Image (tube, rainbow, N blue to C red; front, side, top):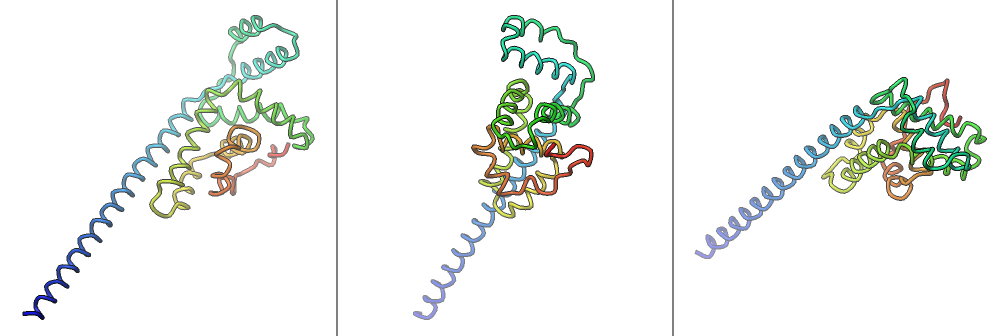
Length: 214
């Protein structure tokens, strides 16, 4: 009787351990499925967001010129607001082309900066540029940040794999804009650490005609 009692206790303990293991495994699988669902939903939202961005390139350049005139005191605020409302928009770019156009605009602004030697100038130029385009760029940066924050905090396993999947959805222009934002923009406070941790800037393509440090 004593022998069978000990065996019954052992079997009960093993059954409890197996049930606990199955419960933990199931909870892990549910967490993984929930993460994947949220992850790919955010990636899809990012693609939709990028596709809705549109930039009238001439309008953006003219507004930037007027903005500098406002800073210098050449025009007053009322004139600035009135004139920007009636600047015709030409060569409208959408989606990734729009972000590429924005990057080109900013590069034009810092072309005379002696290859990033004047960091204060770059910082001021980015602030002015971001003020003009914060509705589009801010939404883009925040979405990218939350994708990588979710990977960092919620991914049950293999964070590197998911970080690479997310990076594969970013064009070179988008990655360089993220780099500027993390170097001299708001991204340097929170997003920069994730950019470095998950090597978001790794292997981005730079055209031979237009270098990042131009």
